[in-house]
Each structure stands twice: as C-alpha cells, then as structure tokens.
Length: 107
Image (cartoon, rainbow, N blue to C red):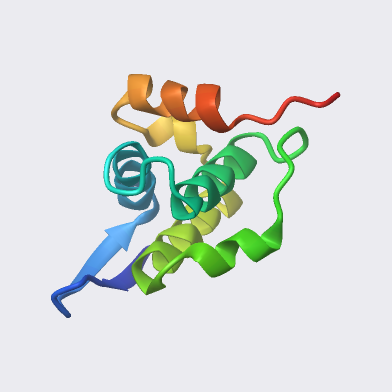
C-alpha cells in the first residue's frame, strides 16, 4: 500500500512502506542526524523491527512534521502486513548505525 506524502515544495508523492523505510533511514542518518525527529523516526523503525524489546514514547511523534508522519504510517502499515523494516532496507550499514545509536537496552 502506498500513502500520500506532501514534500516541502508542495508536490504530492506516493510512498510505499519500503520507500518510507529507506527514506527514513537516509533522513535519520543525514538531514535529521542527532535531532529529536531522528530519534522519533528511529524509534518507529526499531519498534517495527522488534516491538517487544524496544520502548517507545508515543509523545515522540509530536517531533515529526507531516511528511515524516506519513512515513511512520507507511512503515507501520508495512509491519502490519508482516514485513519488518530490516527486510526491505537498502543501506544495511546505515540501518545498523541506527540500531547501534538508538537501540535501548533493558537494564
């Protein structure tokens, strides 16, 4: 399933769950690197990857703009359809860097 995303120029794009995962990974590692928005997107990816082990504060979604919210919905829809983010991510090294940086270990 593809969802509508409005970019900064007002152009309407169609983004699938796979595209949303890859856009999120790229954005976390570049544009949003080190920001609360990066943390929020990373936590969505990590929860979709392993929900039982990765905590998530739903209030983090307030840090996202409309475009990133659409990616979240597409990622969640992908996971509901039985596909984990790591299965469709193209840049495995970037995804691993997100895991390394944002994974919360239980104490």
